[in-house]
Length: 193
Image (cartoon, rainbow, N blue to C red):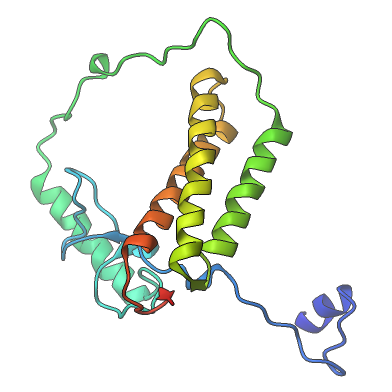
């Protein structure tokens, strides 16, 4: 199967090695949890790939261990069951309805696609494997500009999944760039020179 897939891309692995390039695997982290899977937000738990339990060193993805996911999943479920009182933390009437402005801007997929290209390119080139303070500062500024523009668009546009995803993506990129900029210690997959 791998041999055929390589041939589909004009790579004969009997004659040349398979090209290998860095991938996004270097992005380690996850949501910080305690031994019961609790996050810092009330009533929010995390387990599995999304959780950073602290069991593994700095160069591991969040929780790639099957046993770790299983143990934290069971512990989170037990803690939820033990502390569940049946009361909702809010009433649906407390949540204000989404307010659409009088003029709703149409969503242009080409513009959204280009914003994604900008976000991905900035993150890959400036917040990638080799980081420098200068690159991180540029990423923080460039993503900040995009974030302001996208937030403005978000307030005027139709609320559709591609708009929500774009807003969440640019905010996540900004947080990652800022966190990397504030961390001046090379550890695990965060290498800064």
